[in-house]
Length: 120
Image (cartoon, helix red, strand yellow):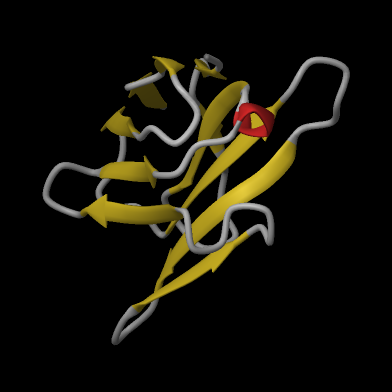
């Protein structure tokens, strides 16, 4: 079993920054794919950013709404995935969830969610 612990959410003013962290522990050797999703009140959960490992590099992808503002990264030694969020907007307000897949095609695990609120 794999456990995920998220941290870094909070209240920030428009234009501010936050860094979300997702630490994986338990029966995990490495992270094949890490993803960040978010869900705003009354809306469906949406994929925000994804990082997928390969033989030579990581593949990164972002939702159009966050391109140029958010950056996903990983720390293989810590089995952690991060989401650096800059130039935050009120529409970024949501609960952010970490999703980790240790092995390609294998099980996926979810974090408990962390609230991000962007408001003046």
